[in-house]
Image 1 (cartoon, helix red, strand yellow):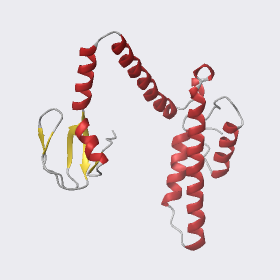
Image 2 (cartoon, helix red, strand yellow; image 1 turned 180 degrees about the vertical axis):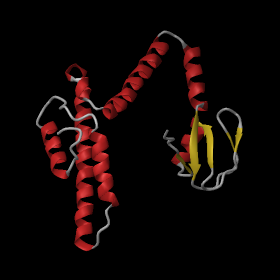
Image 3 (cartoon, one colour; image 1 turned 90 degrees about the vertical axis):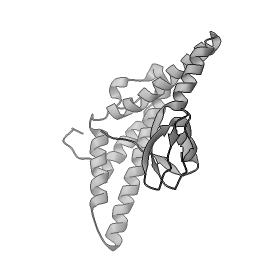
Image 4 (cartoon, helix red, strand yellow; image 1 turned 90 degrees about the horizontal axis):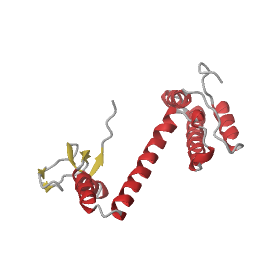
Length: 185
């Protein structure tokens, strides 16, 4: 499949089967996920009535399930780093794995600091993390709060947007009083 070829449900199915049949990560086109996104997005934009709409929705569901399966299979294969051919990973998959690498580095940093008696460093990490800010959109009214950084925030009404410390944001998210906003460039 060349980059100019559009993806359809049959080609997606074939790619998933090829990935399932191999222990190694298979090569996919560099624009694969973008082309797949265009395919699913175009399906979602189409408007039909009756049975044609049910078929369209079934295609969307099938493409979504195959996409999820493919991504999970490919990422599962990266668990054994001695067998990864990073050249066969897409940029989107490398983006996911980058966060895994950061997670391992952080775990090693905590372990090393703990074993080497660097409690002040651990205290600093903890405080910095608690006061790291998160952007939230409020879903419910929330009275004024005192943040982990000892600053006052609020009060808030539904649909307000605010930047507050991580620890406080997590508590509000758990209570379903707010939701995290992901900024896109």
